[in-house]
Image 1 (cartoon, rainbow, N blue to C red):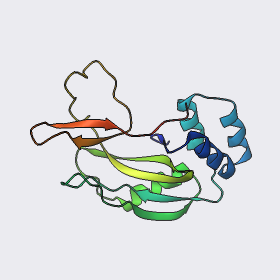
Image 2: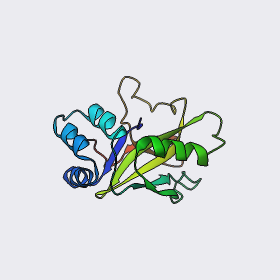
Image 3: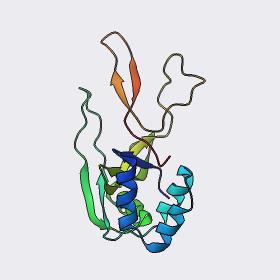
Image 4: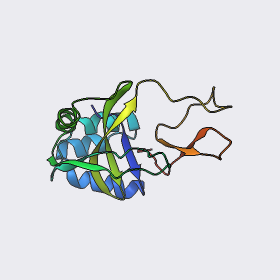
Length: 159
């Protein structure tokens, strides 16, 4: 099953791109719900035509920039195939991490994206102990004297 669905850019453009690439049954099921959790479940079993690329997400460098994504495959029709291909490629998963695979729609272009997700959550920010953090974030350095914090990206799920 997909770990999550990420939309970077306009939600309507992302939805149109998905509707154009999924099978008719998936298209019908997506139209019947507005619940983001259900979209993730539905897209986890969808067949994409033409198939989607699978990328391994770049990692954060010491200077705060990110390395480029690495293409793993070009023609992946299902989320389960993307998961298997990512596991085959990443034979040794770093200790304390798990391999996650999601669907990312960047400016209307869908792809499967694999990344290494920490098993333990990264430390909390001061004053956020009772606040739920967004599911998609990047760590940014606030200043030389401050610890790393979190900055929400311009990402919205199918809401």
